[in-house]
Length: 271
Image (cartoon, rainbow, N blue to C red; front, side):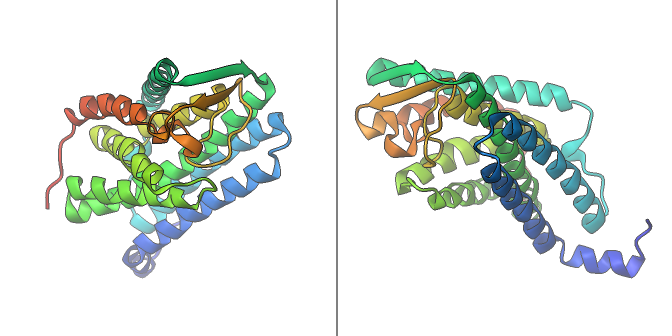
């Protein structure tokens, strides 16, 4: 359907609040659906994947309609390559974190549930996709257009970290750690590729490995049973405490490696 010129102008004038509200609604809806099916792992898997796919389609449609542009950050070309590379970086980075944590603290691993692991996969797919659409697809992208890459990375990363204060076991240190290792790394991944596929794959793999494989707390949210159940004992600065391994010093160090590697490929936008 063709949008009248006047209609396009009105939509474009309010494009930022429309995109912010729209993507925030997608995130909230995905969380609500996950809560509804949390007790049925197989259903949780398919609902999560469906929510992720639906969010991508909706974001593409909304961006085209209110911005009248080609949504290049979700281009089909390079989609699987970007997702795959992101999964390798995210899983590898968290595995390195857990290796260091287990070497320097007391880590107790017991068997969990394959079914629970599958359910977490669906949940983390919807979380990764909707959060990337909001924080990198809208917040970071719009800020970068207006104030340049460096400040956009800093502000979008801080906002990303602060939203995790809403989680049950959130701590100020944990949210700051998330802002650096999660927010900054993911913003740099987007800036380096101008694509959401790499940060989506990275975000999903980190969260899934953390919760779906090791069964630890994620960003202050209560831990779930995954493929394993992991109990970490030791100083909070090394284990992350109740916030989860993301608040560990080791997580910061491990995330610094791919961040620096990707930063070398960034072409900064200056204002």
